[in-house]
Image (cartoon, rainbow, N blue to C red; front, side):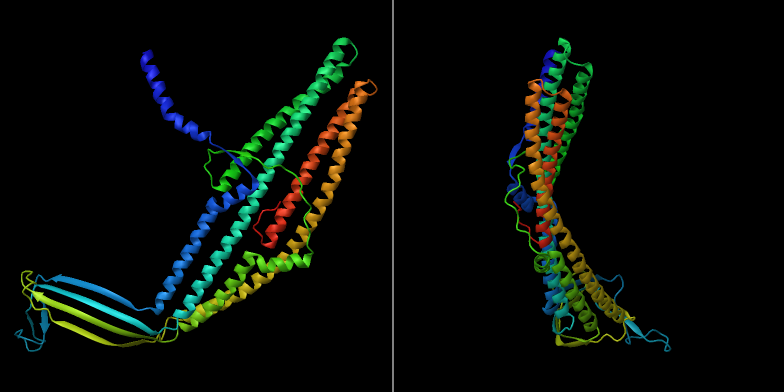
Length: 448
């Protein structure tokens, strides 16, 4: 039994070892690498790329309306009674049209036909609509790339903030554990109060759940980042960049940002293209009322045989060529409805463009205001953090000399932790505002 159990354990280990190895895949990841990986492997972008391919094939379909078409057909029939021909023979009743049956029970025919549109008023607007749709797919892909790049940067920076907060909480925990040890020592010596020990113990225990919460939040954020990059969910990543506020970003004026966004934002370009599509839809609906002229031709072979003996049968051929004109006379008022529908769509596109431009003005004002506010707050919080650190060092020195109380040291520690957390929040908000500036202007590049 022991040998059998050992054998099962070996088999189980052999089966799970590859999975364990896969689960332990680790990758160092910088912010630039994360953005590039997302652009290559993000599943949303892959789906949007397929939209471009679909639109490209639709252009080919539209172009086929102006190209010749050829068909090859064949037909075999077996008659259980010989084919009937009226006007021949005698039926025994002069009041009825006579008929007779003759020919072969097995019939076969083959046809090659071709047509070429000499004049098709629908072809040109259909092709232009398809080409505009292809352009819409391309600009919407660019918009998705901008959004994905911004989401990756936001997620990456959010993980860095959580990691820095966890680091600060660990430092705060060490300080509070040291304070707890000092309080217990003083209490044992009869030089301290029990309430100081209880206060220090409470501060230590309050930090532990927050650290656990931060660890879970970091893991969740990494999983979101992995999903955005289109990587395997079992991959382990280590972020190599740090959360720092680099050189201040040049803040454009509202007019400069607005004009740049009008030129570069793919979603606004898509609205303009959709308006052009609605114009072409009107032309297409009107063209459907015009005649279609085509050149047609056909070559046909047909035969009849008895007992499936087509080899020894006659194969007469028939061929013709000519022109065909098709003029729609009445379509149940559908053409008039399509024309009005296209005109309504054109008016709707104009309203949406105006609304988008007005919303863009509000967005521009908000983005610039956020960038200025976060920059000023960042500078202020940097000074507050430096001041809080200096204050804590002074109080700690005074406490070591017995000049100040434990309560003053606790207050200084809390003030230092709050100042450090506020500075982290200010850095994140500033870099997030810079990301939104790039998104608003239609830039998919990396914001440093």
